Image (cartoon, helix red, strand yellow):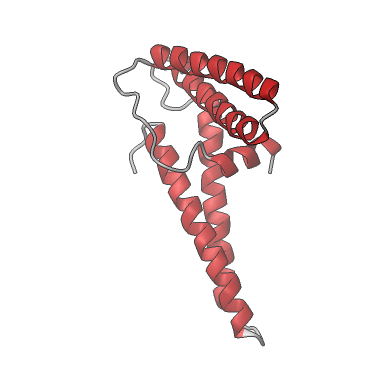
Length: 150
């Protein structure tokens, strides 16, 4: 996995529902995220000046997430007319799908695996199934975000 892909998969924006920008055009949304990143950068500098570690951590996290949203907004704003997904969106969607498929295959392999220790097998399978559920949710959430039907 590329470093960028790992970052995307870990943050997956917020992993929860977020405000809907449907009333904004892609260009307006891009402008709003640019402003958010700029403001958060200023807040980071203030927190750094205060030498307040928890505040620095929280603001840097918010800024990184806002930068990711800015990139996604840029993808939507710069998407050529008639194209359903930008190359970056398509790559991310495929990465999320491959992750879901790999975890699904791992679950199937674990279920087929005969082990001398069924307790450990159950524990590992439980973890894999939870990871698969989270990966599937992330994939579906991103599909909705880029406007693809489920």
